Amino acid sequence: MKNFYFVACITFFLLLAGCEKDSKLLSKDYPYIIQDDVSGIDATGVSVSAKVISSGVFSIADYGFVISTLTKPTINNRRLSLKSAFSNPDNMTLRIDNDLATYMQYFIRAYIQTDHYLVYSNEKSFICKGCMPPRIDHLSMTSGIPGNVVTISGDYFSEKKGDNIVSFANVPAPIIRECRDSIVVQCPETTSTKTVVISVEVAGKIGYASTQFNLVNPWTPLADFPGGARFGSSSFTGGNKGYTTLGELVVKSYATTELWEFNSISDQWRELSSFPAEQREDAIAFTIGNSGFIGFGTNFTNSTFTKFKDLWEYNTQTDTWTKKADFPGSLPTYLLYSYPHFVINNKLYIYMPVNVDEFWTYDPSSDIWTRLPSDPQFQKSTINEGFTIGNTGYFIEITGVGAFKEGINIWQFNPQLNTFFKVDSLLTNSYYIESCTFNIGKHLFLSAQNQKLIEYDMDSKLLFYHNHPSQYQAFNFSFVFDRKAILNNTESPVVSEFNMDAALRHK
Image (cartoon, rainbow, N blue to C red; front, side):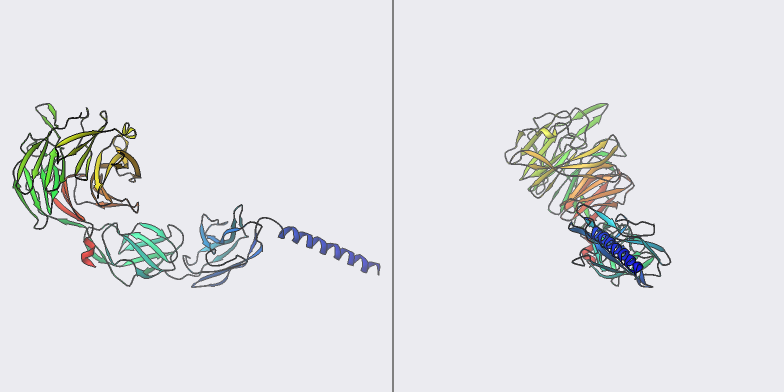
């Protein structure tokens, strides 16, 4: 009888101790979870589950499973969140059927993340027998040029960055965003227009799109420039025609005054009335109404370096030149290329950078130059280029040290306040910028080393790199007509068209 009472007492105290232990466990302020054994392992994936012993006292921000081929996986490995699929984490179950390599050993843990804690469960491992291959259901577009953004919709893609490989035929495509049911990519470069099949590879398994894709080469060769190879020319447009003049002839090593007209409809050139003043290179050029304007520039003859302040108007209807008022301001001491400028509201805005820091506007209707107040934020900036979008003017500051000019700052002009504010900054991934060649709307095109034409979309903030068909790194002149640019390679008569909407003809 005494033994019975002794055993009963011991049992009672053990029960109390167990209840006290459970009470302490359940009352902890951090979550406590236990990973179950992995089940349902077959050629389509695996099933995993976990028990939540305590969810803590803080609100749960996220929960799910983490998996890796290395032991002790964390959320920095592959994270499989269940937050969007379930209202509470009490019953954590998941079928993993994507991004698993056959015969590979994996380690898996459950996790719960609160405002104060990130807690992992114990670890389980398994040998994978396979998973579902990626499936492509839909393409957001079926034709595009390099750099166009395409959304690939489907299933069984990887949620982890870098685990998906998207190819257009055998050419990998840059990936912008990726998740289980969609991948956003940019069309890769191509040297010719061709029909390709898009594929997605995950963990060694490949899925193919049932719809073929037209990958379009945006470059079209045009008639050679009859003025010969040159550099430092100036150009403007009028209607569907482009005009180029001045520049230094490569063969004869002197500047010219020839004026050439290019018809973008017929792809034909003809020579017109020559520029009536001294020959030069790196003059500025702009269009207002039916007139083109040419001015400034430099000339180096017989060891004499000359900088010009004159401005001339060319009437595209009558093929005549008219002298306009000379620029009354100061010019930079240092040798520069064409001074940065843009046109808005039928007026020229031009900036004299470096040691001058003068900002001027020219009104062709009155033929008057007006100096504007200098903006203090430009006093220490080197502004290299200008461009226009609609009625808004911009300046580009190429950044870097010495020859390593790998980035730009974009400044937008406020004509009401006569001030600038920086709207964008970007780096070009080690491609050294030669110049801002042209813009098509909010797409900037920067000429860079290694035969690269860098395209930057100011809206999406995306960069893309085009191989331009030239052995040279810059362009002598450019004409922009709506959504296409006509480009002449520096020191070459070669002319080509870059058409942003070329893909539309192939849909």
